[in-house]
Structure formats: C-alpha cells, structure tokens
Amino acid sequence: MRSRNCRSTGCGGRRSEALGVGYDNIRHLLAGNVAAPDLLRLLLVKAVIWSVALGSGTSGGVLAPLLIMGGALGALMALVLHTGHPDLLALVGMAAMMGGTMRSPLTSTVFAVELTGDFHALLPLLTACIVSHAVTVLWLKRSILTEKVARRGHHVSREYNVDPFDLTPVSQVMVTEVETLRDETPIEQVLRFFTGPEPRYKAYPVVDADRYLVGLMTRDHALRCIRERQPRAGTLRDLLQGEELLIGYPDEMVGTLADQMVMSGAGRVPIVGRDDLRLLGMVARKDLLRVRATMLSEENERRAYLRWRRAA
Image 1 (cartoon, rainbow, N blue to C red):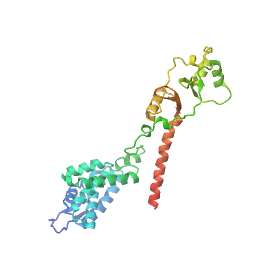
Image 2: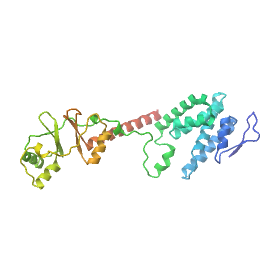
Image 3: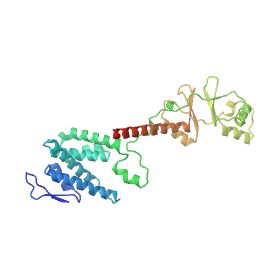
Image 4: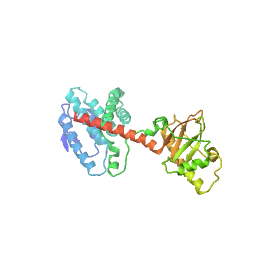
C-alpha cells in the first residue's frame, strides 16, 4: 500500500509503504510527520499483511512490523488525546508493542532509549512496557517468538516460569505420621511382617527408642534375605548395619531432594532433623507429585478468574 503524506508541514511527496522492511516508516513515525489518515491505513493494512504472512507459516520479520504497528497506534493516540507529541507516543507505542508481544519489557525500554537517545522518555517507556508485558502475560499463553514452535507440536513452557520444586520446602510435602519399625525387632519377625497376608508399605523407617533414625527397611530387602537365605539371627539394626541411606531435611527445597532420589533410585526418603537425625517424616514419589498438582490447581484458578473477568 502506498499513501501520500499530506501533513501541513509539507512532505514533498513522501510515501508510506506497508510492504518491505519498513525502516522508513519507523523513521517517519519517530519524526512525527505522518498524517492521521496515513497512520490509520498503515496500521490496518500492516496488521492484515503481517497476520496473513505469519498465519500462512512463511518466515517473516517480527521486530519491524511490531515497531510499525506500535508506533502507528501510539501516534494515533496522540492525535486522539491532543497531546501534541505524536513522536513521543509513537516511540512509547513501539516499545510497549515490542515489550509486551516479545515478553521483554526491559529490553524494549533500553532499545527505545538507545534508538532515540532521549533519556527524558525513560519513565513513560518503562511504565508502558511493564503494563504491556503484564497484559500479555495474563491474556496470552506464550509469546510470538515461541508460538510457531508450539504449533508444530513442541512443548514450550511459559516464559519466566519458576520450577515449583525450587520454591517448596520439604516440610510442606512430607508425611509426618509415619509407621516405623523398632531397631530391636528380630530379623525373623521382620521377615514374617513383610511376607504376611496383610497389606504393607514398600518401606518402613527403622528407629530406636528415641525415634533416632537407624535405617530404612524395604520389602525388596526382606525378599532378598529370604531368597538368598541369609542368616536370620540378630536384630533389625544388625541387618541394616553398613547400608547406605538417603535422607532429607525439612528445610531443604523439594527440587534438591527430587534430584537425589532420581540419582539414587530411591522411592522413599526419611526426613530427619539436621542436628539430631530424629525422624520427622517421610517423602515418597507421590508426595512430589502433589507439588505439581498444586501448581496446576493454581493455574486453573487463575484461568478461571481471567475467564470471569472477560465475561464481566
């Protein structure tokens, strides 16, 4: 599209093009010498052309079209509000469009300041970019930079997403009411305990009379003792003597404990105090899944809130 600029300051036959790279349009917008009809036509036609190009799957530019559409929208707002500064609002519109759509508010702010050298515009630029970023984060699932990748079937997580495992302490997911076995229990009795008809857990922490952790007795360990016909004399403490044991602490993050469980292959980990190794709880794999379930529940509540806000 070509449209003649008819601004009263005189344009000398300057034309605005919707096709092409668009750097001339950006320069004209920042100079504030594009008339209102041309701004509206440029905004609409550029948006249609860009939407068709991206929707068809062809590779195309992202930065320049965003700057053009944001600048045209900002300049139009200046004319509607009668601020007398279409060049400033064009710059603010460019930075806000770029910062919100690409999820990079600080980058777009610095980019705009470096582009113009106008540090007086830093505050409105930063404000507009933060607001634009907040709106797109709340309303859009992902940025335009990762949209094509996601549509091709590749999972793309939300930008700036924080792993909930790195924010949740073990004390929030551990089970505090834990069934235990005494260290003085005879080995023969423990083997009958695991091989009896009653349902049993896969693992039980072994503690002494003061609930200090001695070890972890598992069903696999009991079955191995029976299969290999190991000596059954002695107590459970004797059987677990020298066994490696993975433990956790209530004040460490779930992510650290989960990494240790993956590396060791442990399915259940006793949680003890750092000072006295007294048993405080247990963490199993299903307890780790509760962290993920909590995050999904919060995400669903947030989406429901946004849908209610839209309906309102």
